[in-house]
Length: 511
Image (cartoon, rainbow, N blue to C red):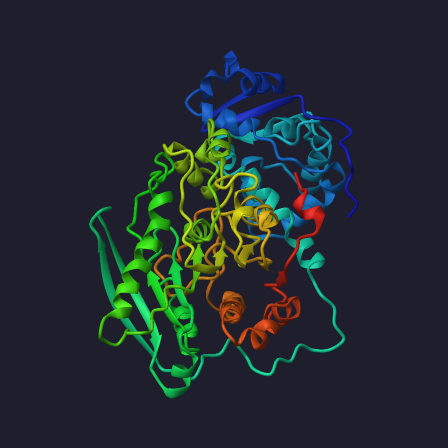
């Protein structure tokens, strides 16, 4: 169906319904509230709902290229989050149709400063728009510009990062299947008395045999989970790597309570990277002691894998430099209700006292950051300080760490050898252990997990093994699994998978 680019008429008034009450107001009065915060008499009935936070949401602007407005709604409506967003819109504005929404977005996108809730209402192609105020307020707090922008790049990434080949990808072996070594698991708890932190660690290592002995020493792998996730979050990955002869230490950071009204303590952005350095110090000592782990903990050549806040941790110890000045500027007046969780979570670091925080640990020789929290933590060039290989995972339906601000744009800063794995349709927790207690659905978007996300977990198992083995004499053997063709070979129609070393300029320059 061909949709009109602009409406013949535009809305002049809004009929607000709240319970049994109904009030008609001019859109100019709603616009006055958005601009000044002053409530006209007709809006006094809704004063309990029209808070400063709601006013800020009304003024949030989503930058949409007018030429891409039609495609934007099409892409958005085909995504899981977009479908749910349109469902909420249908409840808040019962008479709204998809063609009307398309026409309103097309007209609003022509505004110089982007699409806001207010100018979207003004562009509605009817003289009167009826809004259920209660449902609209619930919708407003879900109007999340950074996530909506990230949603729009999904299909274009699938196309632009695809590779064509006349031959099927047929490797000589499959890095996604378990290796031949029997895996032994041991739990150790280290106590950092100086910082009053207890660190439980699960150590996975292969049972010794003559072949593995000949390959020693192999890199030590450290796994840092995200906020509220435990050390079992990547147990499948730890066992996989250990079965191929690697020793893996999966730690659990002390948990801290976080809510929309209470940011993560600033100290956590320092403590988590320091947990890694403390752990390596303790493992180095343990490596010298008699016992099953003697000689198995090569702490001078370490690969780190981190997810979410653990992804930030991995980038920090890899050499990424925090830019607190830029972060503080970005976090001025931040409203948790109008942000993706990672967009306001990062602001906890803005109160750090030291202007220059040294977090790098030079024992880290390469880093894997899965769905990392990045945003403005490292500023515009803090990640360019990293001079070791880095692999980043971005999931396009990630509502926690939206891909544009937390993975794609930060990826372009990296100057050393780098790889980007993109899961088109993957969510924040898709890569984790499907049996993990941390895998709970959010109220906004359903996480893709279980069997539907298995291809992504397989890819991460194979790519991680290949990436870590670049630090070993087996580097050449595994190089073939760090190619676009390999990632695409594991794709499914519902979960396209891509691997690249660069991003198309059109993605990088999205507003």
